[in-house]
Every structure is written in C-alpha cells, then in structure tokens.
Length: 287
Image (cartoon, rainbow, N blue to C red; front, top):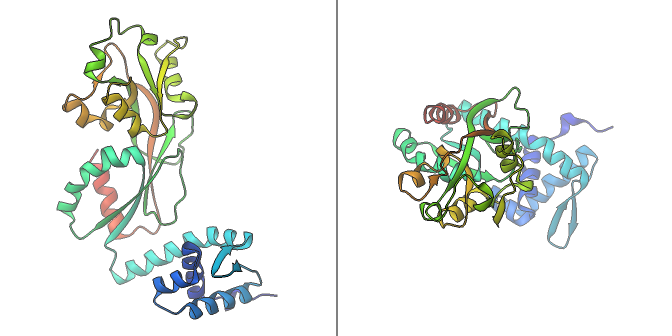
C-alpha cells in the first residue's frame, strides 16, 4: 500500500513543470537544476504513488492517462500554495487575468494605462480565450467569463451585461434605401449557429426575417473590423465599440433596439492575493 505522507510537494512541483514543458531538459532549465535531478524527482514521485506519470521515448516525455488526471487535480492546489507563500512573504506584485479575447482587446487593454498609473508596481498578465462559460485556468487569479443569456449564471458575480444592437459603417448605411428591411442589409456571423442574431430577432419580434450573411468569422473582433470596412452589420454592445463610435467608424442601425444577449461574470481564485484584490476593485470601478 502506498503512503501519501512520503510524497514530496517539491516533486509534485517538478512534475508539473516537466508536464508543462514536455521535456526534462527544458524543465531543468526552468527550475535551475540538472536534467538528472528532474528525472530522479519524477521517478521518486512515481514510486511513491505507485503509478507511471510519464511515458518516455528518446528525449521526449508524454503524460500517461494517470499523469494527465493527476496534473489536472494538482494544478489548482499548486497555484493556491504558491499564492499563499507569496502572500506570507508579502511579495505578490503580479496578477494573471483571463478574459474573452474581444473584451480584453477592445475594453480592458485601453483602460490598463490608468491602472498602471495608479499601481505601477503591479504587473498584469493577460491570457485570453474564445469560448463561452467558465474555462478553468489554474494560473488565473482573476477570470472574466462570458455566458449567453440561455445559460445560467447562478452564484456568479455579473460584471457586465451584453446588451447588443446592430452596428455598421456610415458608408454602408448611406447605401441602404430602407433600413427597416433587414433582409436587404448584409449581416456578419461571429457565433456558432448564429445564436446571437437569432436571439436578437426573436426579442425584437422579427423572428421570421431571413438575414443575408456575407461574412463568417470565428472572433468578434474580426467581425467588428469587417463591419468597419463596410462588409456588413454586426451585433455588439456599445461599451465594446465606444472608440469606433466616437471616431465615426461605426454607427447604430437606425430604429433598432438593444437586446440582452449574455453576461460577463467575474471569478477570483482563493486565497486572493493583494495584487488580485487591487485589480478586482479597480476593475469594478472602471465600469
């Protein structure tokens, strides 16, 4: 019977670094030790656990099924331990945040200069994702997730609401004879199955309108740039495109209304570091 008390936390940390880099040599360079030292730590960990964590071929290592499961379960614990040590030492000066790509590029980043002026010693590390729902990232101290209106956000703090309407370039608008005939205006797709347009049409009592899609994109920001170029109309909340509206690159389609399409929710890791706390409070005030 294996004894978990004999398992070294340092060996678990070495294992996680090796799994991240997929190489004993690179893990050793990251940790400032020899490849042999990394190998011994992993072998000792495997012996103590009684399972094989890596399969080895030539100079490469690959997680086994057991290793992959262990990594997923251990990563969050290692992150919490690391943040706890930093908090005890008073040395946390960075915060890793995870945001949806378009929200990060069009809303967060333009605001960050103000944060840096207020807290110049706190480094903000930004990671992005293109999915919906809460995407687990053990490295993230602060996460903002997007939930379509059809999905529940119970027990989550709502940071922003996605109230969207159609926007297009002024040049395209000038070419449209009747803006009430939606089927005559080229539309841009940026969600799977066009759930956003379907929701908007349903809520505006025009569910039977057959939109003509002239562009298909897998990222909101790309679709917005296509709209600026005059390719078609796109759904967006005003706070995402405020700079484009002020500069006259986009304008709202006349006689259309905003519809609640989704919500951005705020999630923080525990224990929360001082830097995470500062960033979260600033984020809420920036709204």
